[in-house]
Image 1 (cartoon, rainbow, N blue to C red):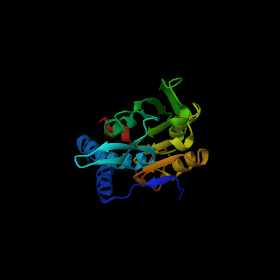
Image 2: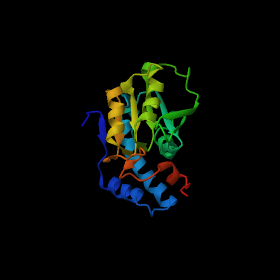
Image 3: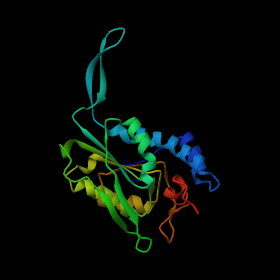
Image 4: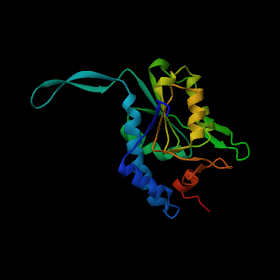
Length: 217
């Protein structure tokens, strides 16, 4: 496996992933399980952030303790719409981050992304010290993921500063991103078997957006 692909292995992650896979899990049950896994994914993904030591006074004595470097800028970037499911947890864990949404949907015939929203250009203070978390529950073909990552690379953010966080990944999507950007870090809870002829992950969990927002008909 690519050294920059990190699979979060934990009994609670596996337990909640089973709830997500179950077609009989309703919207409430689905979203609660997804939120639980989200914490594990973000703790793994944020371990790469740079830290510095500062002096603090405990009730006992002065000591050195680490904080996330105040000199960096952090961007959380959900790919609409399914990526919004990670949004609350991301802002809870990284309350000082900036949130930049990337809107795109998949052409069901070509499986290529079609953009409809992006307000990122020209807003970076220091690209070299910017860290990005791209959020999308399903890394399937990797086409939307590639476009999202490329959007930040074009703004001179180092690839090593970008983390792609997904719930479930297909080998095809991982290969698409890793081949294009070997330094990109991918954090996921499971690498599934393959894609089917419609570009859905097998065994997967169906359409994540529909199940998150209760639009399964």
